[in-house]
Structures are given as structure tokens and as C-alpha cells.
Image 1 (cartoon, rainbow, N blue to C red):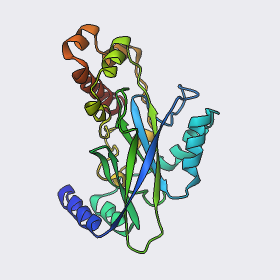
Image 2 (tube, rainbow, N blue to C red):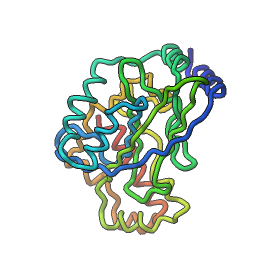
Image 3 (tube, helix red, strand yellow):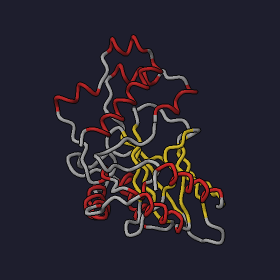
Image 4 (cartoon, rainbow, N blue to C red):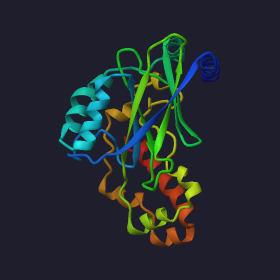
Length: 257
């Protein structure tokens, strides 16, 4: 089965199901130990999707809001072990899982679709999706979880989103503050790749979601490459600066592993 056929089957399956919309709040994440495993990578909005009622998401919320150090324990002992040793599914296996799933989801930000056909694979219990973020204002201030539910099911999904702002120079921050309101949606974009068998944005169930068990360590000599010069910012203007900074974050999430 090729990708095109798989996506057509998924679209046909979606058309058979009812819809339910839920707001996904975006929480600001500040790691308690930046040199350890992180709940969210820098310059990223990470969406964690789990079955409705799963206590893991409440633990994530508490760790982020209370800053009690539980973010490290969560990642190293509750989340990371679930992904270790998993292998990528074939398109046919992914399709069969989706077909049998009582509910799967689309994740949207404003008018932009960030991911489709999202559901926790068997034995994993969660999906993690990383979306590059340039550090600018977000409008709207939340994401939307669109559930596609089989008739008669009581099953549901829930999600939480974590935002880890990237480091910005004063000139970069000033430029982002001048981006017009009607272009703020462009400060967040679709998932970047991580390693060879990265989270496939259309089919989270097909991959290991390697971003969870990789660390986005940026070498010191690479740090300057993740910023724009003041002259470059003046030449680009605010909106184009925001787009270029977003491209830097996409590249940083996708190539450093």
C-alpha cells in the first residue's frame, strides 16, 4: 500500500465519523534541569495526545505549572521508556490500526492543519507531535483537537500543548513584536522531522516519534547560526523576519539528531 492510497482510505474513514471539537491550551514550559531530558524541545510547541482520562496529561500539566522537578521524572521514567525499542509500522499496519480505532483526531491551529489521523498506537498510549515555533505571539492562543468518533463509542482523546520559547536577540524580539495581527498564525508551523524514521505528520502511528528520545543539543559553534544579524532583520522587515526565524527553528528541530 502506498502513501497516496493510505491517505485516501483515511479520508474515506473520516467521512463516516462524527465530529467533536476541543480546545487544547498551550502552556509555557521552562525546564527545571535544562541539561536533562526535556518535556518539550526549545523553539517548539509540543502536543501530547492521550486517551481521555489518562492521568499522564494531568501529571504533565502539574509538572509544567508547579515547576516541581517532575518534568524530568515524567520524561525519563514515564514517557521515554514507552518509545524505546519500538519500530516503524508499515502503511498497511497503520491503516488497520486507524480503521479499528474508535476515535482519531486532527490537530489544527487557526486555519492551519498541523496533523491528521492522530491516535495513540497499541501499547504506546500517547502520541507526541513537535511543531516549530519562532518565539512570536500566538493568535489564536490555543490549538483545536478535532475528534473523529465512530458512532456509539464512548472513547475520546485529550491533549495538552507545551511551548518552549527559543532564545532571541533583542532585534529578533523587536521584529516579532511588530508582526501584523493577521499574520501571527504564521509563527507556528507543521511538524519538523527528527532522524530517519521521524514522526510522520500524517500518520503518527507509523513511527517511533524519535523526537521524544532524542535531545536537541545544539553545539556552541552552531548557536550563532540560529540567529539573524541586525542588518538582515532591517532588510527583511518584521513579517519576513518571523518567517525566516521559523525556518531556523524547523531546521534546528529536524537536523541536529
